[in-house]
Length: 401
Image 1 (cartoon, rainbow, N blue to C red):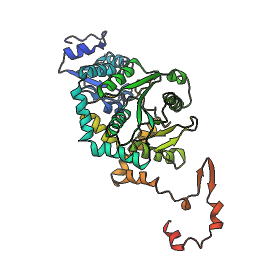
Image 2 (image 1 turned 30 degrees about the vertical axis):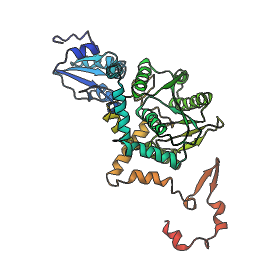
Image 3 (image 1 turned 30 degrees about the horizontal axis):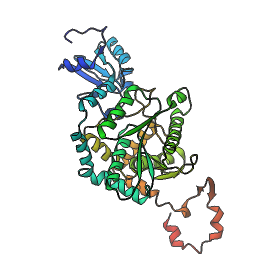
């Protein structure tokens, strides 16, 4: 715009693309983790809270084009900046509108799909497919005759898991079947379309079913994200069973495992971890498996960025950018704290992540005060006198202190 009109605070994608200007700055007001998942080319990330409190340093000589995920937060933010003397507008439809246009522009060639699949077979074979196959063998996650519902949320982890399962199926070491299952708990139209377009791009034949979970938990004040996660898990089990599946597969990775382990200790006061497989307590005959258990998140991000892929960061319908929706019931803010803690510890101990992971494989019940099994708590005092000190050499006891 040559003349700035403070009464016209909306700019469309078409106008943004047709009139590139050197004096325009794209400002992403989503959280940092959302920005890192994908953003408009050339955009800078500015913390929304800092902006609202007047702490953000923004150039007044440039027109600021703000965007959020759908354009719901960026408009009032632009209005506020205008009152502070900035030239600010907001992008109509936000990042979601841009992403849909970007995916449509990619549409969608066999050549591109082949490139993505070849990257798994060559460049990322050691860092992605090898640990995927290793987890399946080590934890006996897939058996002959299994029919597995590969549960796809639309994020990078579950989409990669679908491609890795396709690659495993291509090897055809033993017979098993796959259903690529997407549950729509009440997605926004943008998120639903992004998932569908990415599935088409990647060649994943998804089966989509709809629920009203988001509406059901919207007015819940206490732990709505935990309730939402539990309900989604239950619906996935039920639908998978209806489709003749005996297992559901979720896309949790190595970093999720170690973060959950630490979170249980620091915030829950318990020693537990995210298991590679579980029997369902409410759906007899069903199991949950996590075949991405040994895959590092940084390698998933590398694969995504190498192939120029863009996935949804969070499917929550009610927040502009949600970092609290976790399938393990934890809050995003605590998880971010744990991520930062691990990052800081790595500076002096590069092996900290491996040590946290291995600790769950090296639990000595002789040196814990109490433990639970089958829901029953047991104290070390129950067997202390029976064992006596003669069975344990004094040197060994001292060595554990």
